[in-house]
Image 1 (tube, rainbow, N blue to C red):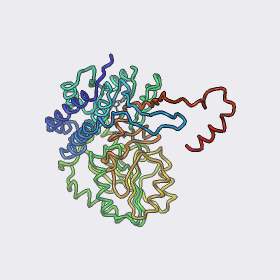
Image 2: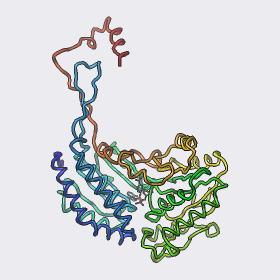
Image 3: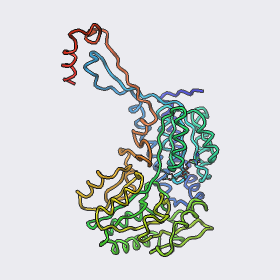
Image 4: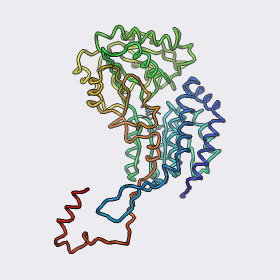
Length: 442
Ligand code: NAD
């Protein structure tokens, strides 16, 4: 059944959601800790606070984003006034992953609601505590015909995908993204697919190596490497490698101590299945730092892997864990061979002080988005579109763009009646030259 909402109502509901999240922040942070020991600092910065900020921004701007946008009319239509109306798609399905299970479920939900849609959200079953608290919060605020959380695993997800939706927003892996795209195609349902990839991180000889190491260690090991935009592997200029690797070791120790398993700041791998997958990627003879693992606690220490073979298992797919392969290059051709081996990644990072090299890399390789001289932080700017390209995804969101994602932009020409140029009407004789002249002006 259709559940239409006006903008004031949506705004009120989003305000309620904001207050509810603010009031329950400790509980949410605890759920994230219970699910995979996500450190409170990371939970607040990358999950609750991120959603709070998204909500505040949406509440502030919703009237502005939702109002019809006046655009310059075409002279061919003179006299007219032209608008873009923002129309909700209708019923939206959001399927979320486990790695940032609160933020990646709630942010699309906020925008889908703001744009006036009915929403069904399926959080990840792999973070059950967070899934439960999301269901509780949403259930306490929204009418179930407006926004509903359906908890469950693959089967639930597949059942939902077999229904007809007006928009599907999926965040998760590439293989499941393909399943979602196929299900959507049955009804020609538009999709956003926020997927993953193998994100290169290039460090050249002109880079500030110490600072690069610090920023890479943070971006790689935050959330224990389980971040879609984490640097997947390093490409370091050969002559700078030894110095750089020492900086990496220093920075890991500075962040997590000599016993990272005792650090309160390192999350755990989400479950035994993923832990086993990651452990199977480690070739012990290639480990130059870290490499400690514990199955019972799903622990893997921040690990540096030296010069693994490009055809080895760890270089096959997205790693999605605290293992960092370091490959050295001598020439730009070496970089090209490696990067071109993979599908277009979600991110690319480049550490250099050589502007023309930076420009060249950014213009040569397609990827979702990235940073020069940092990692991950492009996610934090609401004014940048966030999304992949090719296998790393379809579509982008964040900030006002998220509102647009969940709105059909309906173009309307409001024609005036006080004049009616006869140029377009048959008979066409002798009208072509005038039309051509008009077209030249445009
Ligand atoms: P996943 O694809 O396994 O699961 C995502 C969601 O899909 C879950 O809700 C799950 O229940 C559901 N699902 C799983 N298998 C399914 C199937 N066969 N049919 C239908 N639904 C199914 O992904 P994940 O393990 O939760 O998350 C990790 C992946 O997500 C990584 O590849 C990562 O790069 C990617 N990711 C991307 C972004 C982004 O913004 N681009 C953000 C976070 C994670």
